[in-house]
Length: 84
Image (cartoon, rainbow, N blue to C red):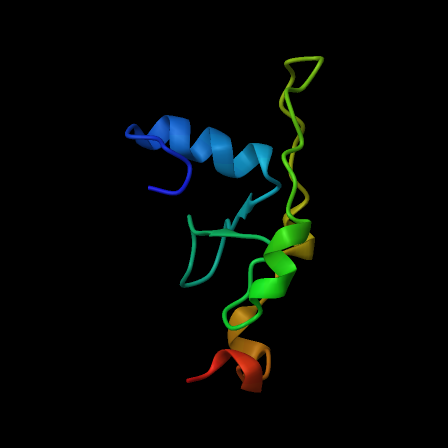
């Protein structure tokens, strides 16, 4: 396991601390996404950083109007250097 977690709640907390967001609608409802975590674009992952603990302890309401619609996006070709 990448994050070294065995409990799903701990894993979700790690996703949140690294900036992953949860989809609230559509066929992928409940799934997590990050704008720098894309298939075949491994070089983007190096820019994902841990956000850290929230000082206030208050969970802010998420604005779901900015959620991506992955089914309307065009297919992204793999990088030539990464394919065998």
